[in-house]
Amino acid sequence: MLFYGPLAAEVSYNANITNIINVTYNGTGAASVVIASNLQSYVTATVDGGAVSIVQNNTVSASTCGEIIYQLTGASTNGAFSLEGNYKATIELHGLSLTNPNGPAVNILNGKRIEIKPIEGTISTLTDGTSTVEDAWKAALYCKGHIEFKGKGTLNVYGNYAHAIYSKEYMSIKNCTINVCSAVKDALHCREYFLMESGKVSLRGFASDGVECNIDGTTSTGETAEHENEDSGNIYIMGGSLWIDMSNSSGDSIKPDGKKIISADATVDITNTTTAIENISQTEQALKVYNLLGVLIGVYDSPQMLNALPKGTYVIKNSSITKKISVL
Image (tube, rainbow, N blue to C red; front, side):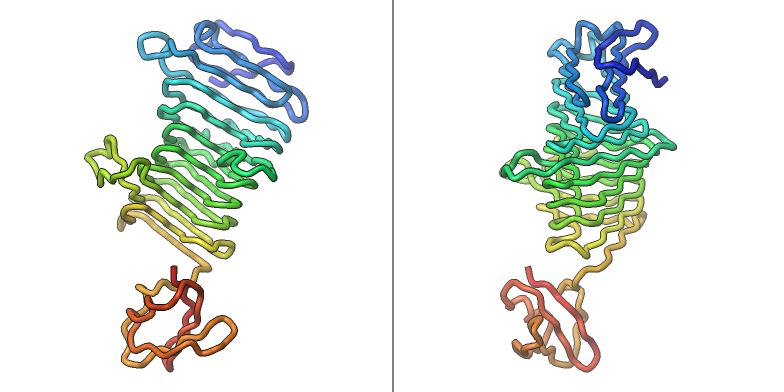
């Protein structure tokens, strides 16, 4: 049940709902927060115009109130949502349109599992701002813990400062539609591992990598059973459809610290990219290599010899092929 609170800059309580906190954004006005009465002693909410900050205290656990569901709705061009805590939580997006011109739209300072659920039949949009300060924030949607995207709705994200979506631990996607429309750095960035099980993901307008996954520690665990305690840096595309437009990127489409594993059940479409050397078929004819000014760099007998080239972008030719390649 989605409960709509009063149109006022206040925090109120409702005895008719359980374990739910509703946050309603009201355009250029102040946001409102309605908290289930059973949660009164477990959370503290602060409203400052369109900025909402909620802190779950350390007593939140399975033996007390259990997992809290945050329902975000409405629109704001000068708003933000921040959540702190030490226990897992679910954030439902009910057609939310949230822009923070001075920081991340959603900032989750909770190191546990965070489920983000775009509700079926709705389209939500998150947009961050810009800053001249270095490392001011990580992404339009930032999570200190691990993000599990679920649900059957749509989420659009615009990353105007750094990454579009950043998870400090693993990231997984199931069923929902995620569209990254722009990012100054990576479209999707996480640690430990990345898992796409189903759904639709489209990435465009990013300047660096489409999907990047780093090892969080110093040594890879490799793939583990059910990904339990995994820190492999692997990227798993096991189902659904992934579309990556590289036209604005100087980086990689899919960049794991570990392995890139793509199932036959998944559809991956990468457009407007240069050709990787390993994708060039062996040829009996020598390959002429030119720089982007058309100057002949050299003649190579096999594609494998191209790895000796310095980092950069080149055009290779013989009588049967003409390709643009990047040496990284």
